[in-house]
Length: 204
Length: 204
DNA sequence: CTTGAATGTTCTCCATTTGTTCTCTATGCT
DNA sequence: AGCATAGAGAACAAATGGAGAACATTCAAG
Image (tube, rainbow over all chains, first blue to last red; front, side, top):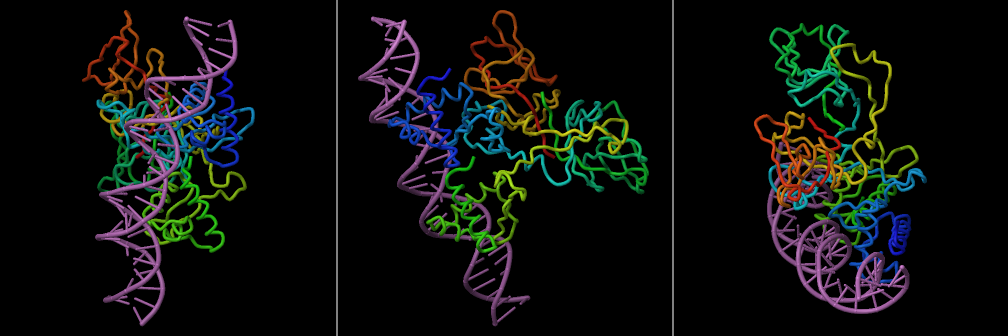
């Protein structure tokens, strides 16, 4: 599967990563293999990526990562809690050309104190882009701002995901985002907020 | 994961914090790394914060904190990659009563080989629940199944997020999920798949 | 409270390192 | 010969990170 050159390059990359804690540059790989050509190393490294043994963080220097070998357990798991954010997808430019690559920190977005997840059932929030089967991430808390999407418990019995609005006279409106359903209005003592929607995710 | 400069800065911060009991200033980090530029150190430190290895107390001087997990493992790479999945939110029961608590593993859902993220612009996929400003996570690849949502490059020029269908005669249909937009049909050589949508997330 | 030094933030400019893409060449194998 | 593998090296583009200026903010001393 791997050519001799690819095997040597991979071994060197593993050793370097283990001893230095950071990926080698192409020049360093070349030197480690007793040659001088970055161009050749580029070909080898690309081949390794195509073979699936390594991963290359696009547009980064020293962007080689080992793909997890499940046999060794987490040996080289660098806990990748972020993804490259390559750009915006629109009607416009090819994404490969987009220069300002950021990093999307999943930890920051999705994890935090007092968070939990719920699987959504039903279509009552469909016009807010929350579909049946989506997962919503909720920050636990008793309070909400006007306009937040909340998990609300009605009469300590029924839990729903709705948009929250205060109304005059201590009333509370819980509005679905679906034209075929009607907002509901309750006395505030009947409604208990369990948490506020902070993010949402869907897996295809 | 970290660039060489980031790694050196992080090591210095750890040492300083351990020996002085207080975080270093940017000028001190610079001096410790043999340079003089506070501006450069600012960039490095911000990058470390974005990577999640440190935290910056906003508006404070010497406001750097390590995000070390107190438990032994993973010196600086924290792995809080899961959330409690408490249950289903529906029109039904209160969530507190739902017994079968699972765990939602974010790493498994969102991270994987050859993934990258894109910010969505525009409303062309609104009926698939993908809204303007959402982030989609793409598995890089040249191939797609019929019905997949793909990032497609048309004539090597224009990148869009559309639903993919094969048509007879080597034609390819790229269909938006928006009733006010029309599907587009191309000769297959004009369309290059860049990746397939695997998940989607939104932050409120 | 006022003041000034220390510190953080933002910016432009620039050099070095690194990745990428070429072409050309050499070697071994069928 | 024809092909696969891979090294050399040049040319270019992008990432990285240092220098330093200008400004804003924090914080402690008076």
